[in-house]
Length: 386
Ligand SMILES: *Cc1c(COP(=O)(O)O)cnc(C)c1O
Image 1 (cartoon, rainbow, N blue to C red):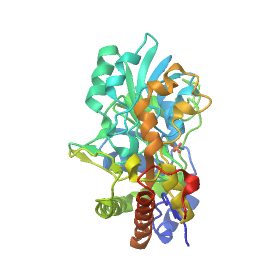
Image 2: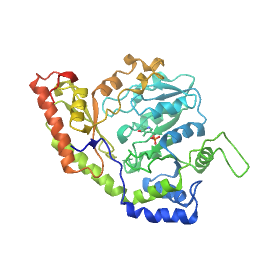
Image 3: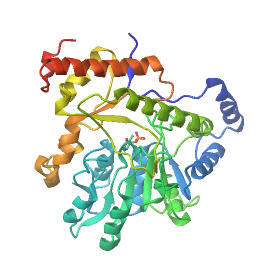
Image 4: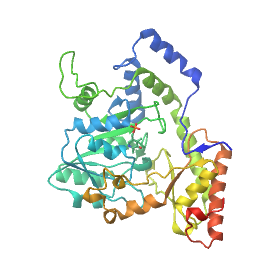
C-alpha cells in the first residue's frame, strides 16, 4: 500500500522551471540579492498585501534575525504549543522564553494569560498563528502598548491568511514566515520577515548579510541568512500556481468536514467567520469519548501506511532544554497539555487524491468502530487489533 504523508511538497511542473535555471546560468548571479531575489520580494509583498518583505534562507534564521533587529533582551512571552524553532530562536539570542497557556478553541496563546507573566525584564511577546489561524491580535497589541512591549508573530503557518480582508501579517512589529518544503508556499527552504517601514527592512537586510551596509561598512554582527537565486526563482514560479493550490486545500478540508461529520468524539479547530484561511493543516482532537486514544489512532493509521503527525506534541516546554523554566510546569499550562495529548493532524496537501482521502477517512471510522466495540473507553495502544 502506498504511503500517505501528512503533507507532500507543492511542486509546479518541472518544465516550467527550466527557463528560470537557464536565466541563472546566463547571468551568473547565484545569490546576494540577485534579480530573482528582488523580483520575489516585490511579488510576494504585493501578493500578500504587506508593505515590506525580506527573504531569508529559512524561517528559523528569519526568527533569529527578527529578534536581533529589535535588539530584544531579557524575557519573551511565548506559546509552548508550536514547533521547537519558535523557542529555539529565543535561546539562540540569549533570550528567556516565558510560556503562557493557550486558548482552548484556537490553540493560540491565550491573551488573558500574558499580563500575569510580565516582569521588569519582559521585552516582547512572541505569539504563533498556529495552523494559520490568527491570534487575538487586538488584545495582544493592547497589552503590548500598555507595557511597551514588542510583538513578533511567528507566522510560519500563516501564508496569505486574511482577517477582514487585510493580511494578518500587517500586525505586530514584525511577522516571520517559513517557506520550508512542508509549508503552504515553499522555496525548498526559505523564509521571510514582514516589516512595516523601510528603515526596519533596511536593518533586517543588513543583518541577514553579515551586517554589511556598504562595501566597507559593517553595522552589526550579522549572519548569513540570504535566500539564493534558485530558491527565489522557484518561489516566483510557485507563486503563479499558489491560488490553485490554496483552492485545492480548501476543497480537501471541506470534504473532510463533510465526511467526518457525525463521527462521535472528534473536535475540529474554530476558524472565525471573518478569517480567510489557508487550510494549512487539518488538526482534529481525539476526545476521550471517541473510544480510542489519540496514540491508538495514530498507531492504527501508521499500520495502514497513513503517516499523521501529532502537531504539537510533545509541548516545547517539556523538552530537556526548556523544562527547567518555571513557566514550563504542567500545572501552569493545563490547556496546552490537554490539547497536545489529543491532537492529530490528518494529511492535507494539493494533489491529494479522493482515494487517498477516502483511505484516511475510512481508517478513522474504523478506529471509531474498534473503540466503540471496546466499550467507548480510551484504549491503550497495545490492545488494538489491527
Ligand atoms: C516551520 C516552522 C518554523 C521554522 O521554519 P523553517 O523554515 O523550517 O526554519 C518556525 N515556526 C513554526 C511554527 C514552524 O512551523
